[in-house]
Image 1 (tube, helix red, strand yellow):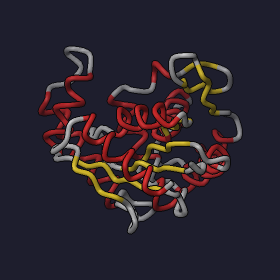
Image 2 (tube, rainbow, N blue to C red):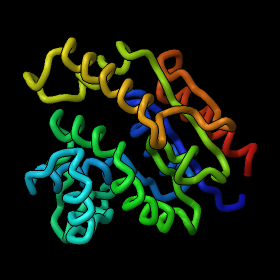
Image 3 (cartoon, rainbow, N blue to C red):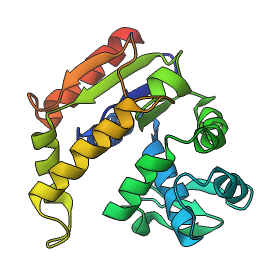
Image 4 (tube, rainbow, N blue to C red):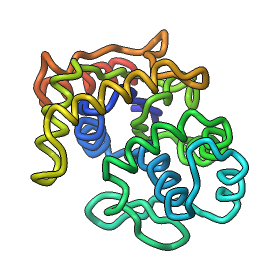
Length: 220
C-alpha cells in the first residue's frame, strides 16, 4: 500500500481526536493534532498577557517560541521551548482563545509551514479544521466528521473534570465556537469539496473507524 496523507476535519466534539488516533495506530501512521498547536499558541499568548487580536504581539511571540510534538511512548505531547505544556492547554479559557487566534493570519501562516513540513513525508493522519481545505488541499484521503451541537456537547461534558462547566455552558461554548470557526473570512470551517462527510452521531467509534479504513484501503 502506498504512503498516504490523510486529513480529518470537523467541529469540536465530533470525535476527531478519538478516531484519528485509532486510524493512525491501525495504519502505523503518525497522528498530528493540529488543534493542539493553536492551543499552544493560545497558552503562550495568555502567559505573555496578549489579546487574540494583537497581531504585532503574536508575530513577536512566534519569534520566541518553538512548538513541537514529542513522542512520550504513550502518544505525542506538545512542547513549547522544551517545556511540556500538554496538560495545560485543555481549559475552556484556552479553547476559546485558540478559536479566536486561529482566525488571525499571522497565526495561521506561522503554523502552516510547521504542519506542511510534518506532512511532507506522508504516512500521517492530520486532525484539524482546515487540513483538507487549506493546509493539505492535495491530501490523498479527506474526511469531515460532524455531529449535532447537543451530541458533541454531551461528549465534551463527559470528558471534563466534574464541576468544570455545566452541560448547558459546554453546549453554548460549542455553538459559539462553531459560529466563530465557520464564519471567519480566513480558512473557515467547512468540508473540502472532495471530503468524505461522516455523521458521527449516527455511528459508534468502531463504525466510523471501519468506514474510514475502508475508504483509505480503496484509495491506496
